[in-house]
Structure formats: C-alpha cells, structure tokens
Length: 456
Image (tube, rainbow, N blue to C red; front, side, top):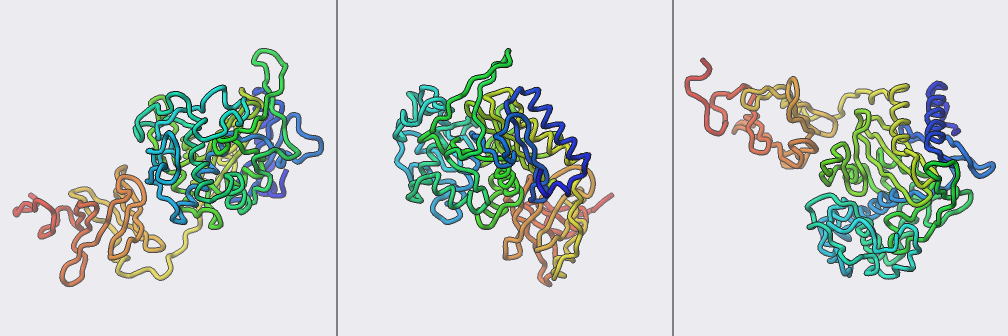
C-alpha cells in the first residue's frame, strides 16, 4: 500500500482489496495488480496472486498492449503543438507509405482511416516483428477495408503508421522519443519497450481446467506503437492522473481534453462506448470515462479516468483472457466515488469581473423560451434554459466582443453581443439566433419582425 492510503477510509480500502481479490479468483489469473488515483495522487494500490518475491505490486511490470496507443497519441499531439503537422494533414504528406497515406492524422488516431484491423499474417501478436521488417510488410492483401472517414474500424496498422510518422518527424526511434518526451516527464520510469525485473511472466490459462502454459513475449517490430510497451500499476496511475488534468511539460489540459473528446461514432452494437484521439470513451455506472484497454498473449490491462470526479484506476493481469480488468477498474472507481464522493471545488468570487459583462447576465429569451446567461471566471459565459432540459454550452472569450461555444449544440458556434448606438446591449446573436431581454421584444432585431399588435 502507498503512503497516500491514509487519504482513504479503512472501509474503502477493504472494499477495494475485496474487489481485487474477487477479480483475481473468478478470473483465474496468476496475478492481478491495481491502483486508484484521486486528485492526481495514487491513494491505493494492491496485488493478488503470484508476484515476484518481495516486490511492491505497484512496481511489477506487465505488458499493456493497446494502452500503448494512447501514449503514441499523446506524442502525435505534441508534434501538432509544435506545428510539425496538422491533424487534418494526409499522412502521406509527411510519410512515404504504400497504403493509408490518404487518411488524415486524426483519422488514424480515431480509427476512422478505413485500414484493416490487423497486420499481415501470420498472427502478428505471436510472431516476431522481424517477419515484417519494412512498413510495407505490415499490410496484407486488402489493407483498405472501408472508405476513409466513413466509420470506426479499429486498426493496429494505422498506429504502425503513426509510429513511423513520429520517427520521421523526430529522426529517432519511436520508443526513444516516447521515453524522452512523454514517459520521463510524467515519472513513468518503469515503462518501456522491453521488460525489466521485476516483471510478471505471461500465461495462457486453460478455460476448463486449472492448468496453464507460458505465452510468447515477442517484439512487435513495426507494430510497436500499437502495443509494445511494458508498464506497472504505479506508472499507469501517473498516466491516469495525466488523463485527468494534463501536464504542461507533456501536453496541457486542453490537449488532453481533445484526446478524450469522441471523434468517431460508435458501431450500432456499441452505443455505450466511443473513441477519441487515441482514447476510448465510455459511460459506466452513470459516469463518463476515458482511457484504454490492452491485451497481448499472456496479458490484459486497463486504465480509466473519470474527469468529473477527478478519479482514475488501473489494473493489470498476466493471463491471456478471462480477467475483466476493464470491469475491475470501473468498479474500483465506483467504490471510491460511492464511499467517499469528492467534494466540489469551493466557490470563489471571480477576480476583476468586467461590470459590462455582469450587466449582460440574467434572463434572455430565445423566441418565447427563457434562457439564462451567466458569467464565470476568465470572462467565460454559459448559456442554458432557465428550467428543464435543452441546449447548454459554455462560451470562451474569442476577442472582438465574441465568444466561442465549448461544448454541446453550440460547440464552435459564435456568441456575440449586438449593441445599440448608445452602447447598450440590444440582443445576443448565437449562431444567427437572436436572443432578446423580453420575449419577441418590440423594436428588436428579431428576424421576420414581431406582430405590431403585440401580445393579446
């Protein structure tokens, strides 16, 4: 257990320990380790089953499979922040590739590039990457399965292209770039492309008998950016904390929010899940989660962050299948949220609030529907129905007396104050809709005008 455990009540820690023990026993896993993050700190870690003698469970390495993709995505957004690429660029504008070059960087990050799910055979997760020495060797006979941008179709070769893109723009191996620019700044010193003791060996557990056999731990070669990394519960807890708030040394809060934002529509059978830019998004137990699962022969892993509750959880196991690490992490989050719900941030008055903006607040009318405009710190505005459901959004200052919608129906739309000749506010223009102080206010600029006879 960590020193931060004192921040959780004994009953909460016992409940977390019990949930971990049940998962290891019912999943028939040689070992399972897990951790919980709250307010950016690891507040609980645990391990169950066969672990290296004397090792702290938080420091034991496991393969994390496709969680690697999320770290690759962080590095791609770093390149974007530096102006070395745009997410709308076709990958072929930066990288020579026989397939997938017409897909944009964003489409590869979100698995909408239409590329095949798997690399050319034989089964790439169980055969050495030396069988696919060049980028062209990653692709099979029919690499393009769908038109680009049309649907979500998970693609490991797509992330092979992103790894090659990182190497091209940085002039260094993918693993080296990731270690120097992402892993080291986040303190993920036990994460890398090769295992370092103590680590858990990967096992295949027989589905109907209590026996097992070792799984191969091959080097994925050109597919490394899709799933090569080894990591620990402690390191992934740091990554979960990063997913909650970002880190200016790696990628700020706005960039991480961009990773978390759904970028691809879910398949009809998966309406409770979606995909952002390198992160899976899901709704579990009524809360929005962002993270990723991972699997390779001998290993399964999961990391989830709940930004609204400032919680994160990770779980790793050394069995090929049968261990519900995603359900475990979601369950750990739910236990902490129910036993010890996080208090809201304390209310504080805004500093240096603009009196002119304060005067704009209050009730406006979209036609006959009353809506309320509120002012927040930093000149941020929010607009929503006075009661009940409807269109809600926050608006960030955009300069020149305008604001840009942050989320919801008005995401990206412009809110502007239209003033009379004397400087007073006449109405609000929100994406061309006119909001007036009174419903269909006489003499206002409501398109189509108002009835001269007024209300009757």
